[in-house]
Amino acid sequence: MSARHEERATPLIENAMRRALELAERGPARGANPQVGCVILSPAGDIIAEGWHRGLGTPHAEVDALSKLTADDTRGATAVVTLEPCNHYGRTGPCSEALIGAGVAQVFYAVSDPNPAAKGGADRLREAGVVVTDGVLADEVSQFLHPWLTAVRRGRPYVTLKWASSLDGRAAATDGSSQWITGEAARAHVHAQRAASDAILVGTGTVLADDPSLTARDAHGDVLPDQPTPVVVGERTIPADARLHGHPQPLFAPGTRDLDAILSELFARGVRRAFVEGGPTLASAVVSAGLVDEYLIYLAPVLIGGESLALGDIGVGTLADARRLEILGVERVGDDILVTARPHAPEER
Image (cartoon, rainbow, N blue to C red):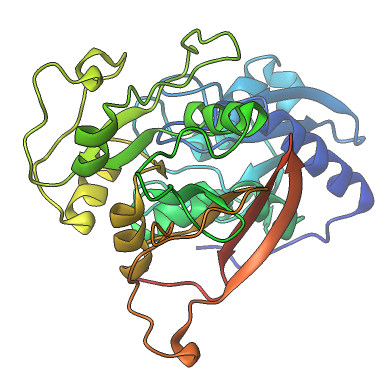
């Protein structure tokens, strides 16, 4: 292997990386593949091609950008890409080899690929004499890719837990009624979150009590193009006439409460974002297990009282053991408030 040689990221390179990040945002957030953008610069520093990954089975961002150029264009060029070029054969070939074959002289990237099957592109490029520099705008790109990076590093989907409650933390009234605590704007926001997720999880108790459809719908009640796979956690049998059987995506009901096993299987199926929307039992279980990566808490300006809390026992016996959260944002959604938070310290499993 050749000696490691890096170039400093100039303002021109940083601007190109910001453009690559804009391109990455055009790709689908769902599925096993990350959103990646690439900009190709001429030896003089001009942008001569752009590319991004459009989803499973399509050319990766680097190949997409290179496909718009001739061999004369790419010889001595610089590639600026948000994620380390891959180094494996999957549905497409290695981006590292594509860049080498094109005669690219330099590669700047933001974040190393944590996928064991795909990483190693930087080393392969260096072996071929390409000057490689990593860490360009790494914080910005890492934040953008946070759900995907977290999922791949932990070997399970990124888990977002949602609940809606009154200001005093109640998810239902004494008689069990809970529809609707929050308003239409908050419910529309939830449907957008469903559509952005690969899977949606509920417990058998919710299925039996509410018979939910778990589809992502627009303001008119029409089913959106992107739908999460419905997943039921629990051992009880799902009725044959349950609305979940009519979901656009095949129902996954493994008949177990083993969250680790369920999430592992979902990850193997390409699920990287899981949206937990069950009742207090499932919500408490994922919190207790340290499996929540992000919280979406919708608070309605009502007081209910009683015992129907949004969370049950999560294993906190004393305040010193309380699960501390980092508040990422607080916003108005119609008449309601949405609090977005993450565990204060990563709860590694």
